Structure formats: structure tokens, C-alpha cells
Image (cartoon, rainbow, N blue to C red):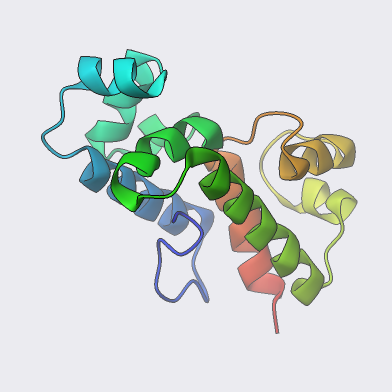
Length: 144
């Protein structure tokens, strides 16, 4: 479910994680008609096409909510639960790694302030898969 896209994230870079997210989404969409998926999920068709491509660069801008809506179809878990579980996993990882939102904002490549990181983690603003990969890689790097 995205946060566990790599069996062993130790030493994984944000690029490795993004590639794993892209592969998971492409597998979930394998053989599906993007127009039908878009109609069924409410996700923009161009976004569905990007997710189906399996290209990490194409999925970097995809919002977590959209990825969750697509994964709901194959995971059998409601999209909001997938979204919540990913965010919860990140926050628990922050505790383990002893990271706060300001440190995350300073350490990741995304151009976000500490407040924006907090809002993204809480689900009050968008969290892209590129940002998710950046945060997850930092957590893995800093975890004991």
C-alpha cells in the first residue's frame, strides 16, 4: 500500500521509492481502460494514464488521494483508509526517526515549509507521490 511498496526500504532513495510506487500503480491498472477507471474513481483521465505508464517521473506529481482511489479497486480497502494508513505510517516513522516537520522541510528536495509538511501529513493539503517518496526516504535514512 505505497508505504510498503519496497519490502526493505533501508537505504532506499526517494527515486527507488517513487519507482516502486509507479510499479505498484501500473500493476493495479494493468489492462484497464483509463477512461473507465477515471469514470469509476473520479480521478482525472490524464492522471490515470500517468499512473498506468509505470514511469516514476510521470507519477511524481500524482496526489496521494488519487493513487489511493486507484488502489482501492485492487486492494479492497476504501481509498480514504489507504490515504489515512499511509499518512499514519509516515507519522509513526517520524516518531521512530525523531523527526519534526521543520527538519523534514529542510532535508527533502520538495519546496515545502514545515507548516506545509505538517498540513500534507495531516491530510489538510495535497501530498504528491514525489513528496511522499522524499519524506519516506528521509524517515528510512534516519530510523535506527
